[in-house]
Image (cartoon, rainbow, N blue to C red; front, side):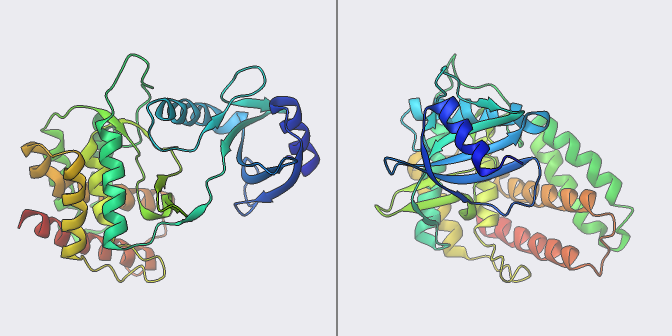
Length: 315
């Protein structure tokens, strides 16, 4: 990990900045990435992301180019600052550096009104026209790849949790339904929930963490928001769908970008896709998860909520 002197030298040599204060924004538990708030001698504030070049520097470059493109489209996003030699991502001693404006604000409150604001912000993103200069990297929800992978993983785990076959069969049916349709691509965020949104002192909402963004289907973002807006990390097993919240999100989204009939018909399946993604990732990363494991109870609680959300959408 770069020490404070290295960071100061990197910002001076790559960006021409003189630093007066460096504050970690993430616990320093990784030896390959870090996040800092930077204060310069003229009291400007920035966010510095560091990733070892041997790990995910290409992902950082993708995020930088996408955020820069979004800024050029006048979409609200933290500004990317170029290095002295004009690059969006700098390098220093084997590290990739991304320098952004610091956005002063609070985590978006989990209320119907603010989730509606987030839905409008997503719809505006999905409305951006794809142009010749639009970044072409796939989001982590890129449909053909994601759906095929999830189907394979679900088939693997169905034998591991025999008594819960209904869950995996239902998820597989949703994946099959999504595989049967074709929708236009747009830029999607990929991880749009309130933990990745900031409300500024002027009550503007801003999405952060664009690492999962890229080309995908708009309803994958919307389905994910419909599910995760019901999450409370303090009580992970207490996931109770709120009809007013669901209606607000869909209504506010459609105020900016109306859904097509196909999108409306398959929206419940995108909520199930979010569950399938969470299920398979949790099971793949922890082979010790059984029916008695707290994580499994959390996943089944979220699955039950996803079914109820789908029912409410179809009413």
